[in-house]
Length: 371
Image 1 (cartoon, rainbow, N blue to C red):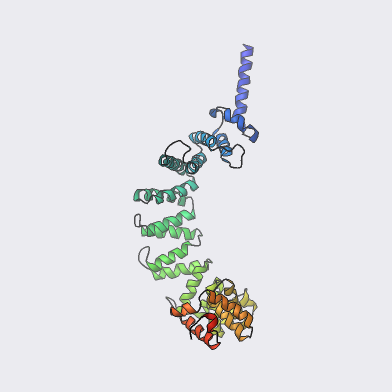
Image 2: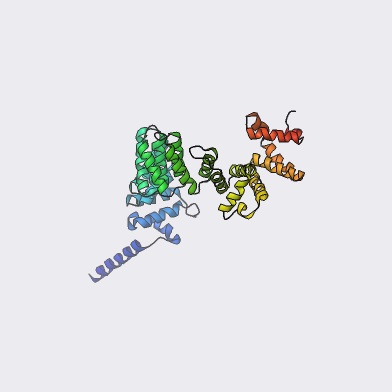
């Protein structure tokens, strides 16, 4: 009787040690031979991930599948998620036809998504939308909505875009609601998208007041595309009172090639603007340079980024300062981009003026112009 009790206690000790044991690399092969049921689901998941690691000497998709299946059956959402990827990557692993294997993968992903896993929800939504049918799109929207409730900004953006633009699930109210949520959550593209939709009437009726609000918010948040659009409004008086100073300030903040080119042209045409801008900025080349050097910087910085019109303007400045070598280097950048030849043929007014500069300096052959 005493021996039986001692043997039973020893068995309990061994089983307890096995249940508490965390797999280590040197034990993986022994664990492979052990009964699945001896280990907790986190241990099963860990072992599956070891076999799924391509850098492991024990790499084996077949063994990874077996352990992922066991961990998934025991409630590990990550195991469902990893199984989905395993089946997508190895469509013949299960021994079934490709279509059946894809269905298995999608089913595993849905298990993970239904458990609340954010990455599974967004991935499954993408897959469902690719099916391109209304029922699956509605399911995709449901999973995106769950992700949005977890403050996933990308899900909010996708919901807003789809509700606004997809005729199968169109709902302008929800579309603008989700885009607004994304903007309030700090997404930099959401205000610009809202501005575009309000301007073009792509998510309900056009609303220029809302367009102006969102384009200014986007510009204030640092979106350079919005900055350039806002500058164009102030420059042209499009929906706002014309304000060349505000236009110049937004072009300067944008620091993009076309913005820099336009700023240089503005300074040339309106010299008083330079002084006004300089009074309102505390950093950058305008704050640190004089009028002439700032114009040079505008064209030079834009030329460095490949802007053909700026390259031509920079070349003209160097011609005026008798630096013919640097002028021709700049002109070559413009010429290689087809400027001003093709732009003039398309009716660009500045290009037409630049063609006259070419003729005045006898550069027609270099720019391959007729006459």
